[in-house]
Image: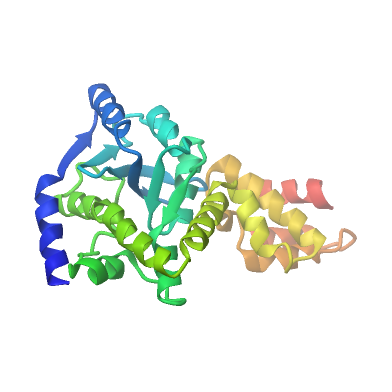
Length: 286
């Protein structure tokens, strides 16, 4: 562990960081990414008050460089889509479903050919799900500070702490992948890790409606699901979380309202709390 940690620190001094803010920066990014067939990728975003995530940063590591792309200052969609969808480039993630979800919704692309170090570590540790920080500590003996996890990633300028946090999140991915490949190959589990990683990425590539329907379709009645889809479409149109329309716990209450009930309108209004939404519901379902 001490030797590996020492080698890692030497490597960090050689891996330069590049901030991508302009068109010229994008040209440089494209040129550099094309030289590497393996990329470590992470994202920073805000997803608290909207239906779709707000992408702040995309961080990419190659074997020699780190890139921090400020998505609020420059549109890197075409370049990112180019590499994310190209199966000739292997993309390394920690918890790929989350990042694939954000990337697919914000960049309109599907992340292909991936490897998830969290999934690999779960296989190697026989079921334990480990955070990125724990995996880094295991392989390099380094404790990462995670104080910026819930910071405001849409605020500019970014703080030094946020920048360090964002770069740390990609700085170890490729090396961890290398260690895990050796360990997985020894026990003939490399194929399982790859297939499980691809499965998670595909779930992330699905539309939000499909993902959410998968979670509830076996629990709710047909009527519940119809109301669920109606709410989902409204939330998407208004770009707000579905719970802002009404919470899940009210789905069954709404589905049980009888059209012949003289107090139906009042009951709906009590649940959804909005006149226009009440009228919309009545015209759609009653």
